[in-house]
Length: 483
Image 1 (cartoon, rainbow, N blue to C red):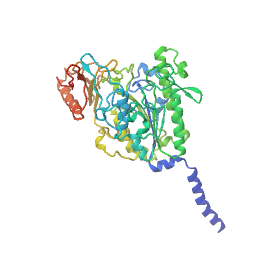
Image 2: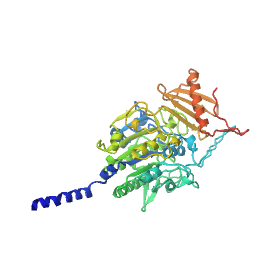
Image 3: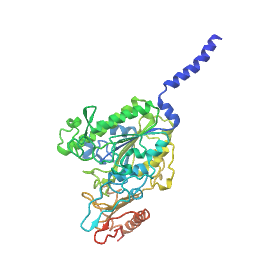
Image 4: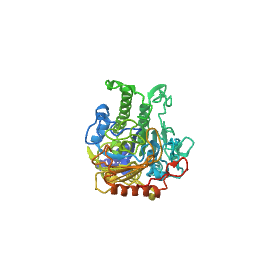
């Protein structure tokens, strides 16, 4: 009787102790709310990695050192046809948080930058200069669902005197090095120390400072038993291109800007590795979805793609994209809903505005007004299920002059790409399945195909009340017209 009594007392005691010391990940798993790390880099080219983003290696894959991106690709899925919603930063980033195409959310260019004009044409005026107070955004919905929402690094969601100039207005609980600026926010903004900050009296590279803050926030969220959404937004590799001397010795054959750029790339990759290690050490890797992407194409070369930042060509829109669970554990319900087979490569296209509805589903919550969304829930696409998860139909509208490029609108449908150039009032048509570099304009060879796609593009712009460049002399808008 005595032994029976001892055992009857011991069993609940052991159960209580086990529950007390069980990793917080078990409780998070029971709640069905995985952590999300959304890792986004700035002006980062499609091939700015040692992990090739298509079937062929390029000279850039051999130039850069990104061992942690390579590990992430082996651990999860690599998407070779991932698109940004716009080829410049603000509009693209707002699409991630709102699930909307830039024509709908109204920001089609860089906040606070009206764009330059030609002698005869004026850049379009944006409807909105950033996220608006009545917009429904991803961090707000996740916070309402129980997440701790964290923004570290470049925000650039609104101008300094606007509502979204402060990311806390978007329901980010914690922010670090995040404000309305689009360039690195180091000691010397825009100057030679743009990538350095003082941290506890020690000068630290900005990429490292963001990483240290991310690790601290992850640790605190785990200790507080809170699922977290970490928007980790590196300023690298935005101008000014300044050398991260921690990695200079790895590029003895490069000089000047090429070496500086390569060191910034490796610094961002180190950040990824440090975060992944942190997740494992804290026991939350299997409960964390990790996404790596970029806001738009590189300002420099994006070979084999044509074009660059603020271009309608693929070099402006196509970005690297990797997604993986921190560790595989198929016993978890959310890993079962979104299985990410290690080493899978998928060439099906999707676009940044798809992230919002997809992550909301993963978090077990919904958008209060899904009719305003342009993005699709691509959970099944990410998981490799089905063939018709998301239609291969994408629109872009970039109606501003800037740097090397002029205002353009474009549409992709089933590997065909049509571009309208406002400055010359001309159209170009490409078959991306045969011509990824967009070298051979087929508009003359396939006029009926071009006309059908032009009609869809024009209807998209018209139905969303798009703003267009205007004629300087008359002040009239200049919408695209088919020949």
